[in-house]
Length: 455
Image (tube, helix red, strand yellow):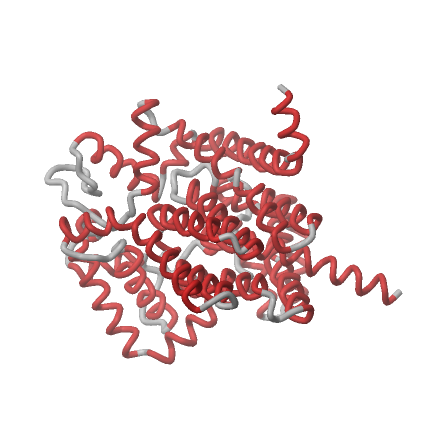
């Protein structure tokens, strides 16, 4: 009991943040399940993961096929499927994964706080973590059978360890950060190149001691990461004759980038990216479309489209990166909650871009209370982004050589550079919401101090 009391006293804020987020998650899960049943949490990615798990358990094959023959795949990485398999073997059901995953996901909030404390004052770290804990999409996403349930906590824990390294220069932290980043990559391969950021910063941090120490630390950081991935990479080479981590993280992304490009150029209408893929491959068998040989065909098609429209692709990508910081998918939450006028944000955007402020005022006057709240959320990420820029600018002015300043910049730009052309902006934005929220709080206090001193 004494140890529990001591732990509580020394980690009050972390415990508060965990239960704040977890309580909101449970409330969201309850409301969604009342309106749709628990089946809503198994849709989209969840359907694929359930197929993978059942094939692993029943046939020993890592396959997306729903009937024999079960062709092996590398479209999904093994981290989340094996996590689900353990839960399924214990409970004989996927339903517990909704709540277990939400519990693990709620650990993200205290991790944001711990990361923030390594870089900023405690009050900035705390309020940044509170913003993270109450952000609608994080709460909404937590119960769905998707990799985010464990991807984000693993990513944040790896970054926390890396921040501890940058502050203490204890090499043990960077090696453990590399190990957990490897596990994170097995959950979602989007972090695959983030190890280079870790290695470069480790090299810079150690260079003041000696060139040999800098090389040793950065090389060991990369080797530990590769060692974690190696069983999966070797499996892919033996079974699929490819060293690639995942066909969705390489070939699949290239194809979807080209699909987004053609949409940007007006060459295609409202057809889904996989409808176009079916036309290219000549099959509507969804399982076969995601096999390594088929995604290679899609990637070749995508590379050709991008090469033929290089400048348009660059323009589209830069625009997508900018919009990544301000757009949201909150309308989808309201749609699932069965709140009327869930598309009101698109109407607001239309009125704003057309400078039709009279129409905007009429919309605000005649819409429902729920829609008005959604309209307020339209401005949430633009405000967060502006405040984050102020926070970054303040760090730059104080000390542009501060290693944490550059690490936050790389962290914030890394994920939009990879994923800004994909759909589900709010889902992928979870990867950078932690630094954005903490920087936004820092920017807010900077504004507050400025106006207070001015007065």
